[in-house]
Length: 257
Image (cartoon, rainbow, N blue to C red; front, side, top):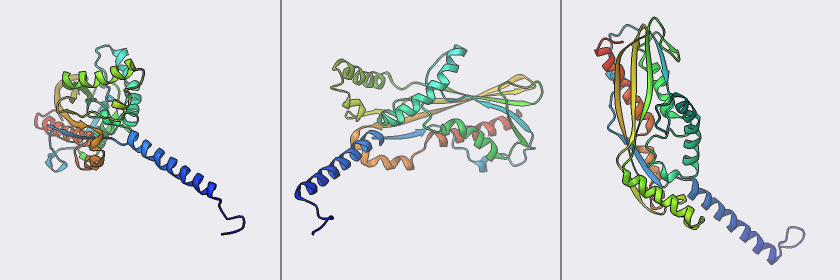
């Protein structure tokens, strides 16, 4: 090859090194961003749209869904602060430490599919003539307040992963690749969330319905080649949909809808 398009031996070597660096960078990004974990949700109601009552007379429903937060608190102001923090926390852990997703029992992934699924399911049920979002129960009409309660994972798993983080800090970052790349395996079959539906009629609380959802999963870098299995497991959206449909069935049966 001659002319301007010819490459010297040094240029060829430099081009090969640049290509290797690019591939190494891509591999590093994949290792950090891909989830070396497998997660599924279980123990939630398996109600379907076909299970809903067919003779229900559609009426308006006022409702409000609280965002899924990752911090327990009885203080109203602290809960409000936790809402925004939970969204940031979900994004950080799904991006930086995706392999720890099974451990965090109550994380609504990026896009908040769990939070949004309540409204989508209420709409798909076709049980209401109108759906009106309202922060408080009106003086007249039926109102549903939906919240999510944390179910903590086992203390063993919490201590195990906490120790990894502490070890990374105490060694001035030398052991940080352990949690960052999920080098040590762990499994959790406890924790998750409980979806709570509070039904009000004319401003008065009529009944509270609670549906627990268990989050089960394992994390380990060796599981990276099997991450595709997550496309075939139940996700948070599936669990919230099942719980919401079961709530509609139970509330109609009890004469509250």
